[in-house]
Length: 140
Image (cartoon, rainbow, N blue to C red; front, top):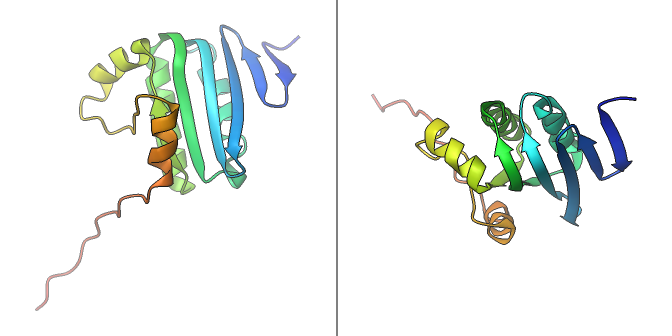
């Protein structure tokens, strides 16, 4: 039997974690992780979180249920950030105390879009994204 067992179409168990997805709106996904996120299951987490990116415009990553968050988890969040920007998906992160502790070290400038809870995250991804700065040539 594989290390990943499918419990339902919207939930999987991956070693020491369980990942679940709800969809409050058709194009909005809330991915919830419970347990521990580490090198043993981080790839499964990334694949799971992005598995329906083609029909997702807004993504909430709710890690508030994680008791343990390894440095591999930060790499996963960076990968999610890059993938979401590339796919034009607005996303936000809800950290647990363990995640927040690591983010203070690995993301001191608060580049990742964190929110206090899922409601705040849902509101944050509904607003327009800030425009990216573009270089404009100076007039001659």
